[in-house]
Length: 433
Ligand code: GDP
Ligand code: IMO
Ligand code: MG
Image (tube, rainbow, N blue to C red; front, side, top):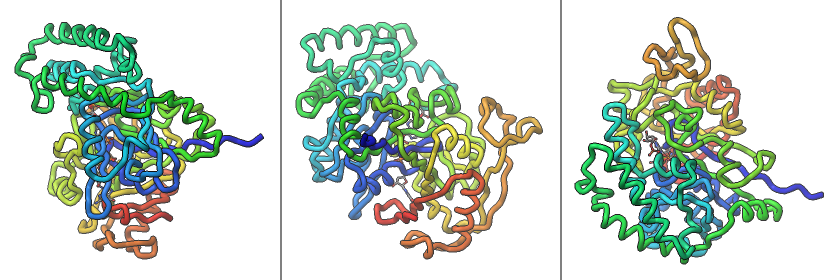
């Protein structure tokens, strides 16, 4: 009997923004279908080619390849207004989403009132706030689990408006219980009512696009021998179970989420590509053992343009964290590593790497529950920099020895091969070994 194809996975191993979008775009010519499986418009995936930069939030990063199907799977949550704007921008840039974008009927919808609640809850947390992107992610996944949510397919049902109003009124009632001025609150610079009107207008997306039972679609395509890449959002250290809880997002961001977010059985998973930066960044609150508050941190931010793709916030920067990387590789079953942004350190005479954690005198090789404790300190090791511009390197042989030594060092430390080296933001600046 002929064996079905398997789904490959590409996801982030740190706190997001590892360069997933860029690599998915580079890999897309090898795949028939690119599928998002979790998260929502909290993601910002940047692609660069032909001197142009594109930032995607809900739409998979294969969308600029007109022959590739891009699928938004059931595990993704969608804000129709944000989606509408993203679609408009794509059309202006020559993409044809009506032809190659498919959406699961089972995707949950982020209502304007979910976004309102996100802001209400964050304000109530005060100094303990998560640093949410305020896209409504937490409240929407909460309603999904509470069995209250509305899904994409519901838009086409006769009683959608009635169900929408009921859920919105429930949210407004909850919000009234907080010390929060709803009438003064703006969502993306719009009043609640104006945002809601635009969101409602965007429900037409449900009639303009291919809404499908995506689990059936994916499995039929695997049977037919098609190749599929699942594109992760956020990063492993933001996973709701394995990240630095509660400073995490509200979805599982790991490879296991491909099974639930696309309807793919565990034995249908092929390769798992894990993307990581040569250093670390984090946006929002929460523990970050190797965080830098000095000139090196500022240089990483400046050289790497480390400002959020979704919110524009400055990203916190720090050294590469090997115990965290090892942990992420384990949780995801990573088969291939992809290193990005080493070029950001091209002018560093030296840099540090965290090899272990010290927790009250005990040395740890992995990321423990106690990650939240200030007593957990990184054990740092200094490395000599390569002091060479690597951004024009086309092959491994072009790279300076100090850098290839560093690659070998990481491979040995985490026991996983690095098969792709990204040396700049452009599609072309990618070395595949
Ligand atoms: P994603 O969320 O994982 O897709 O990553 P983001 O797009 O949020 O952030 C990664 C940023 O780094 C983007 O601005 C990319 O254009 C850029 N980038 C990706 N790979 C590289 C690289 O190898 N070198 C440099 N300098 N920039 C990169
Ligand atoms: P991509 O896919 C970086 C962070 C937020 C916040 C926390 C919770 O571009 O890598 P949420 O809005 O999900 O409730 O925010 O998670 N966060 C991200 N950080 N990259 C992302 O996505 C992120 N998505 C969420 O900053 O700390
Ligand atoms: Mg991003």
